[in-house]
Amino acid sequence: MIECPILIVGGGPAGLNLALNLAWWETPCLLVNDKPDTPNHPQGNSHN
Image 1 (tube, one colour):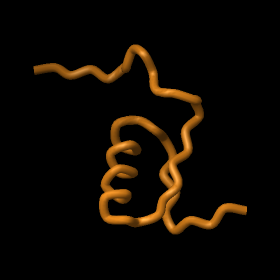
Image 2: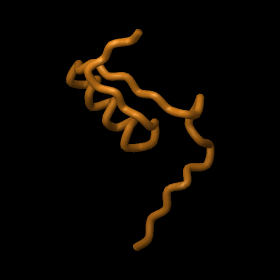
Image 3: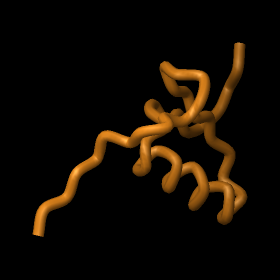
């Protein structure tokens, strides 16, 4: 069993950003994602 104080579910922009910030502060975390890699065509949209 893996023990970790913080579990991040989802490797999207928010999950990756959170994991990077926690790593910067040397806080252990575990990031899990349902896909083995990042998407070639992100699905996020923005409107002005």
